[in-house]
Image (cartoon, rainbow, N blue to C red; front, side, top):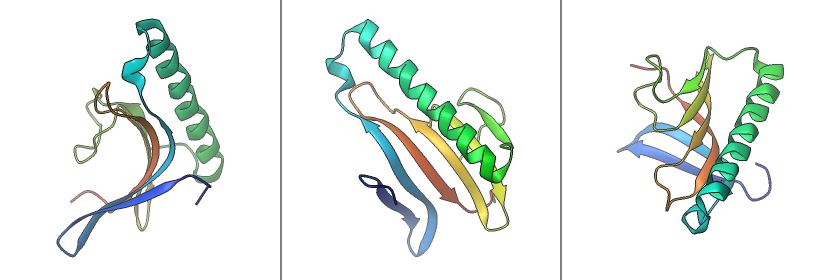
Length: 116
């Protein structure tokens, strides 16, 4: 894993639901002015887009690449933006997460089984 990255395993009993590797984090967004907050969000979204482009060179075009409001957004995921690649072993997703203004903005790789 890249230096500074963290990994979390989410499970239900003995069943792994997904693995999340956090690649980048911006904290304390709630301390920014409204314009700095929007600039920071825009720059972080560009990081997401750049990461999608890099992964695409390895895995090909994503099967899905859109925001949480899209009808095809995976119902078992919680992110603002998500790119999804299908793999024989499961789903590989790149996600931009930001659950609340007081919480960190995160760029993560999520590995999950195929949807049930």
